[in-house]
Every structure is written in structure tokens, then in C-alpha cells.
Amino acid sequence: FREAYHEELTRLRLAKEVRSLRTKKHLTQEGVAEKAGMPQSVIARIESGERSVSVDTLGRIAYALGKEVRLV
Image 1: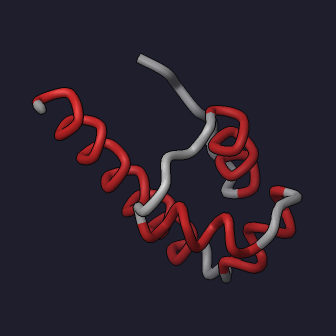
Image 2: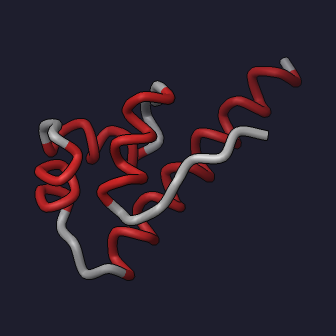
Image 3: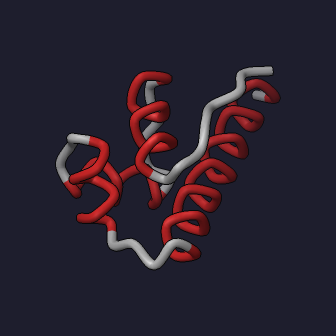
């Protein structure tokens, strides 16, 4: 249970961070998706926190937002 809870919190924090970075840069979901080479619906699902995201997809989104992914 503890592990599932931790994974859920991590996913929700990631969703909030992606949305926050996108809005600070005055970008739409569509704009980020276009820069990342993926459908807008992927960005929407990630921002909603309803789905996990692969490292590859996260890297593409980070690049589109001018950030980098650091795994700790």
C-alpha cells in the first residue's frame, strides 16, 4: 500500500509541475505537444495525473518546456 501511495503522489506532483511550467511559459497543451512531437491528449492525460508517463515521454515534454529530466 505504501508503495502505491508513493507512486500516486509522485504522479500527481509531476502532473502539477508539468502544468505549472507550461502555464509559466504561456504555452497551451497543444503548443507543448507540437514541440514534443505528440498528441495534445497525451499532455492532457499527464497533467490530469490519471496516467503514468514513460521516461522517454517525460524527456520529450521536458525538452519542449526547456527543462531536463534528472533521475534521483
